[in-house]
Length: 165
Image 1 (tube, rainbow, N blue to C red):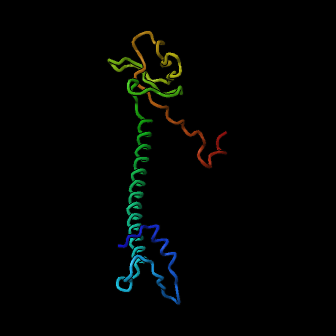
Image 2: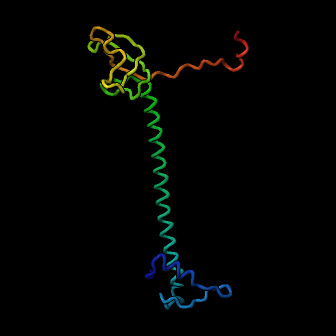
Image 3: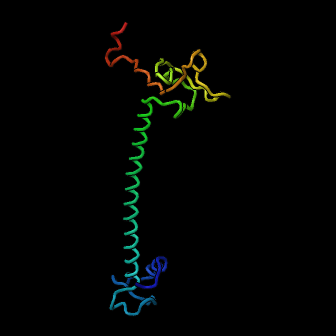
C-alpha cells in the first residue's frame, strides 16, 4: 500500500489523464515501477473503496439490526400499553396522572369486599385524593383502578340505518 490517504488518492485520481483510451502516467511520485505492480494511484483507490464498502456493509448490517430491535421494542411497548389498559392497578403501585374518570374498586383491604364504580383521582388538588375518599364513613377506601374501556360503537350495522324507527 502507498502512503496516500483518502484525500490524496482522490486528488491524484483527478490528475490522471486519459490519452487515446489508456492512462498516460505523468509521474505521480508515489511509485516509479507502476509497470510491475500496476498504477499506484489506482491500487490505492481500490484499497480505499474496498475499505469503504466493508465499512458500509457493517454499518448497513448494524442499521438493519437496530431497526429490527426498535420495531420489537415498539411492539412490546404497544402490547404493554394494551395490557396495562385492561388490568387493575394498585393505588400503592401507581396513580392516574390526569383527572379523567377511571374504574375503581372501593373496599376493605383486609377482606377485599367492596364495590366497583367510576371515580376520579384529583391529582392537581393541593391535597391529592380520590373522589370517594371520605364519602364512605367506615374503613373502605379506593384500592385499585383501571382506565375506562372505550365506549361501545353505537352506530347501526351497515344496511340497517333505514330499519330503525
